[in-house]
Length: 354
Image: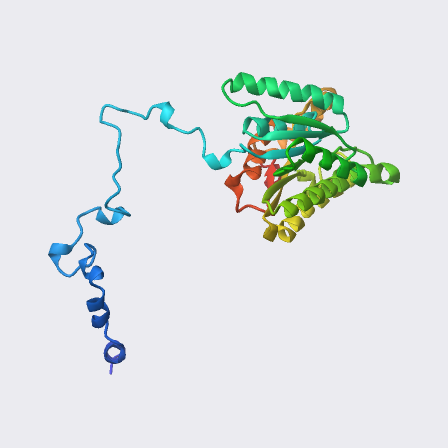
């Protein structure tokens, strides 16, 4: 027997075997006729194909409900009027929320606070320098009024605090709650600082101070506000401001303690997100890359070669601006990110993946 003939016979046997098995299964399976007879609505459905006459017309399956009618603009209307369009999804709004931001009187914290306010939230600015925070709070309110003349101005309060002190943090949170009807919905931990120094020459007291602000400050505010949310049985969102330095080692600046502190912040966010998930508290981390703040601009003006070196390693070919953090922080605080927790969002122009 030739191989093709044998293969054909084997194939035919396999088909016959499957046919017999299918027939046996059909005989042993319970009949569906009683079910169909008992469910007259099933028969009457326009999508039950008993004959060609009942087959749906083209496009009929695309409608979820035949009763729903959709009105489209006329042929002479090239686009919808702007008054019918919402500028963004409602879930991105922070309206009705109270957000706390540490380190909010200057730099990245101040700009993120501006984005939070313009997204509809009331704001509590926490800073070691309350006088500066008060000046910035007034400017934020005036800025909001100019952009939204018909809207209710946000309530912005300022609170002095040493974020590395447990008693200071506890007192500060109590003051915030008293100022905002015993309610806090969100937290942004932006307080922090960086120093460049060779590790072998770095005084341990300076290391402890840096970690006290960057790590302890994040931990103390997060746990204090988490307790408040749990007592209220309320959901909340926290955004820790880390750094790409928590995942990579920046070159050429020597800043081992800073890098380690930001790695701790990143992992605190991940750990808290798991621990507090069932309480409805989301915790995420934003890790900025090289940002052109007033402080970094001053440094780079004196070291143009350093700026050239940094930007040459950034795929987008430029440093970021503080405004680049407005959208990410608003998204993570809002209900638009309700299923996002434990995430690290790097805002670095692609630096860490290049």
